[in-house]
Image (cartoon, rainbow over all chains, first blue to last red; front, side, top):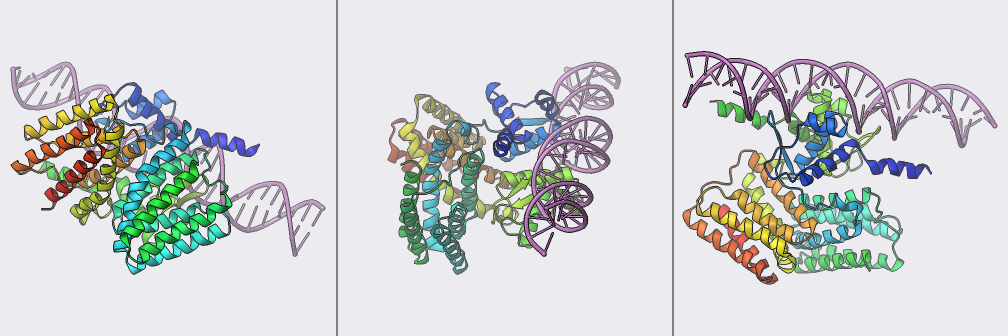
Length: 234
Length: 234
DNA sequence: GGGCTTGAACTTGTTGGACAGGTTGTATTA
DNA sequence: TAATACAACCTGTCCAACAAGTTCAAGCCC
């Protein structure tokens, strides 16, 4: 099977991904505290049997995640101790991690819907309507609708006119995508009655935002997310 | 002045930071849509007058932020259109961006405090108590207390036993740190009466979590954040 | 002509080496 | 002893090269 071998390669991932995990592991196992210095890039490269370039890539991502910080001439230092991040134990319990992320999603997206209803400009409302139309078509044709769903939710986050909401929304979804990339296929076939439900739920949200009904939008979004979680774990 | 020249260099930032911004600018100005291909690494390096290594660094961070996606052999593609992110217009209105992030912080941290009160283990409570003690000392000695404040809030996020909360919390603070790194000093001197207020506010939160009073913890956290915002923008 | 194979051109992933510029700790000197 | 100078080390950046994967079109076979 070609596909399985491909998946096996992807499972290993890029070398930089391995380096990322191994550095996190070093911080944990060596019990490095905040402010402690990591081994140098060259030393890590030697230890891992990789080039310095690859180790550097991993360190750049670690820095972007706020876990380490590089000081030129001095070295890389631990800035935050890596906690149990989703990206790590995704192999263990993908589903529970996805469900756990709903707790954050609840509060963030509910508030986003409320603010969107209050502040949406005509242009942003137009973007939401178009995303809603795309999602409707995708659902009615019974095809995959995950991307369209994501686009609608993101359009709502944009309508808050607060970049912090969009940024947080992207971050949440990036975590989920990392899980899906690890092999879990969330966009599995839906039971037929779920299509009608998802249509209704999203319509309620869009309607409320159109009418600038803040409480209604928040309620509809919360309702939609609750049902969505139940669809994942009946 | 040595310091000013150093700051000037830092202001320019690393080349990779410039590359990051310029690529974002390309996506926006060229109006690249989701799925469109970016110029190749070599081409970008030529355009920017930098090495391919540096451009690669920027693309890695863009991929980590979920904006682009690299496909080996094919190129890098736009995955999400970069919205008005904090990291971009930080030069324009740092303060308003910080204030805007409070809207997200409100809902996330309030819910985190509620869940922490419900779920905190004895070990996690111990961590919170120790962080609280550190913050108390820092505040009473009238020194900088920003790191200690951050540590306490993060300990509360950890006590939710939900990695998604910690991850989201880190993400929010990473944005703020990027702003601060750009030159804005938030940890300016406090008015003396603010110290007592901050002591009381945090004590209320920690007490509620200790007593496993979910509503109390949520209320105390919300109150603390509201006052914090007012301290920033009286 | 239509469908398939082949291959060239291009792209990202990875390696190794090199140098510039900054930091740190030590040893030497005044 | 205290200040200085130096050597070792580290990150940031550049370059050249190859491996591995994708794309697309020319060309071949049926």
